[in-house]
Length: 483
Image 1 (tube, one colour):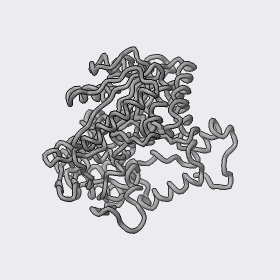
Image 2 (tube, helix red, strand yellow):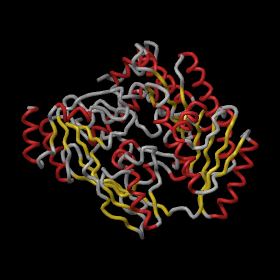
Image 3 (spheres, rainbow, N blue to C red):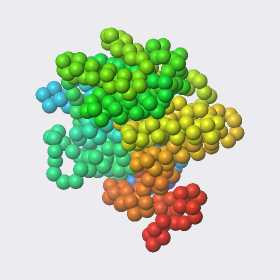
Image 4 (cartoon, rainbow, N blue to C red):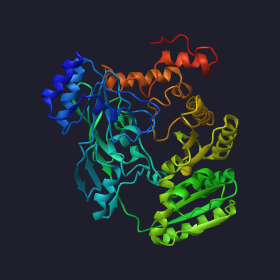
């Protein structure tokens, strides 16, 4: 059946659109989280929406799984291929179809790079706000799948707040549209359900995204602190005073030293932590807020503050933050990037606990994250060549995610669940809640062929994980059937 499906796909699609040789498949065996690897049966590179429909119809008829993939920059194993399935790479659907200046929107295909939208819109004085660190490479389809964020999402929101309409192909090949170009619509908000669904509900082939005017003025303050916990409290001080910075990022000593050695951004390497606080808007408003922020940061314990004097200096300070992940890669053979979100009021406590866990395990942790919205990115440093270190890093990562849940947070902020955090879904949600997720999945994908075994654990998996770890051998809700 597998060979027959590949033959059919080759017969219905352009020459070269179906890859099935081993040397062609290996580049697609993982996403940015390389701890997990799998080789698909074949990779398909559609060039049109009709091609995507053809793939889905044929795979639906054959009962073969389909995993949609963007640029492969994901960090949770969400685009990991299925060993018995087709990997659907959307990289060739990469056109910006239109920019509507009057309605400040852009209609784009899923393979369009995040940064390319802002580059195209700049001619009209507009830009697309969500800006993941990988924005030079990541695509809007992947951003929609993971509900990606970025350094400016505190003020301007995540992907879900900046996408108005999505056209997708269902598991049986039907084309459907959710949302619209108006600000609101009747009925259930299924658009929000699609965004962040990690490819489990449909394959996005087109989207309408919001554009916003480039700010008249912006400034960036870098504040350094002698203690990480004091920097965490300073975040609460700024937000509770009513300031909503465009971006409010934090880096601890390990991450800022790595970034400084790599980028030479001008970070004080002796600081325990730094905050990067960007304010934007009308010039007079920015001036007033900058003065307030400077006073508040000083009162909160900042030992040194630097105000970017011009765009060049501002870009250099941001470059250190946006290159923090590769910078940390220069100081350790491997690192494990986590992603969890907590209430801002818990920042100081959680950072202290992470430091304690790091000391307990002997694994260094570099903290660099979106402090304003409590979205943590602890980078756990390890050496995969040392037996047991990968497993220890994964265990520590799981403990950090469970800590996030314990303080009222969640196990992801923008990287998704994928394969990496599927066990921790059993910690955050009970069986009845997970059942509802499965029912939503079944409503969109009755055949269950879209990105199976990702993001939402089965109740059986949670029962096993709970017996070993969460519920200490006692299964919760024993009256609910397991499957």
